[in-house]
Length: 613
Picture (cartoon, rainbow, N blue to C red):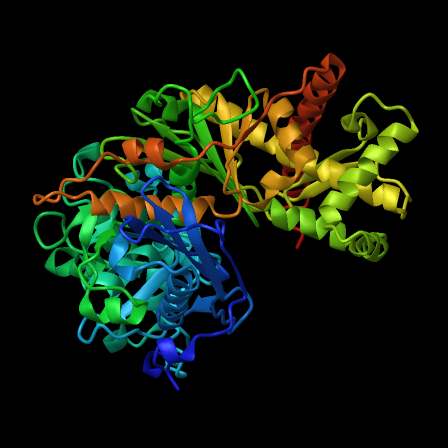
């Protein structure tokens, strides 16, 4: 049975997790509200904020994921939309919010490819080799799907100029390689019926019925170069599409990709008015039709919106809402680090800045005429999890953490402090002074941009104890901090002016990690009030921007909305211990050498055995 045939309200699933951030509020029935929708890899979330930016309700639900083969990951817009509707219903119902007070909706989602029929607007399955619908409408190839290996190599072999705007190479995680894979594997008559969306654009399409696309989706993940950039005439590059074998998508002015702006298509920056909520979508969401819908963004970019607008008072340890209004220029010095399984690093600039190993620069994706750069660490949360789970002392440590009713991370942080006290060490970092861990176990995204990078350890011992695990855990956090410094320094040397890091995600709760990043990078790390909801909070701000549209469709400046709705949080400052600074500086030198020597060793060995096997 297809999800699309199930009635929404009568079949609400039990929530996987939900929480109100203000359970005792007495809502003003006439208060305006805005909804943010965040679709991550594993769950959909709905967040409702008031006119001041305070979160009033939050609901989460897990979404389906299919893995037909190793390296293949698929989802369904039908399933995702159903989960979104369930979340919105719960957020409204369980927190007594009048649907008629909702003025705007904003969306963010993973940068995944969604496929529909341009004839019927129905989902088109992406599961080969037969591409039959199993009843689940599996029409989404997830961002982390690695099926288009050959297609990615073919695209990068062109050396086309547009590749300059994606860090020099198009990643296998981007969407054009996936479209080309479908062209190479689908029956031709089926491919000819397909139209393509980034997932965030698919959601605004489902909400409004409009074919409007976002600059964020198309520029960052689909090879769109905004008109006027490097001589771009249509945004889409016809010669590029012809060269890689997708010439049929150039027909009718790229209609199946969204068209040409101002001719047969429309492209918008973050939160600009796409249109209004349709009768059908409103009925499914439990909302009145006519609500403003903002242009969506990729999830990490919503993290930028949800964090970097916070007012900062660097004379105290708080993000202070009482300091003077933020100046737009302050955005250029603030790196948004959106941390989860992996970490995305986002920075804005007034002019284009090209950085090797960093995606972009991308124009217009968040604010018109401004540029964004996107660096990243392939694995941070996943790396910590892997290091813990593969150590011999993991089960013992996990059992101890559970007996104290705390997370294994908090338990190990306390254990490190005990180890420090036991030997009267000046700092926690002193414990790991002779342990050097390099952790590119999932390759390197930035700034080396080499998927063949791996890990290495200097100082490995036979210690199987909890102390040994704690040391390995500390070294992994130190590696994450060192690599963050490597990315920041590379971006600054290329022309950025980053002086502070605005974190979001669960890693913010790790005190030792935040202190390590601040001290290693020698800059303050700013932690938002809504640690777990910064991304969906940013999406809700896009809803507020859409709702501000006048009769001509002109909306309030996004930075102004961020300045007004962002909340004070906390500041973690660089440590002042000179010994620790010297230690981390010399270990950063070793970190850089470890990254270079593994490449040298690999090259030397390959050279030595060339032609042997």
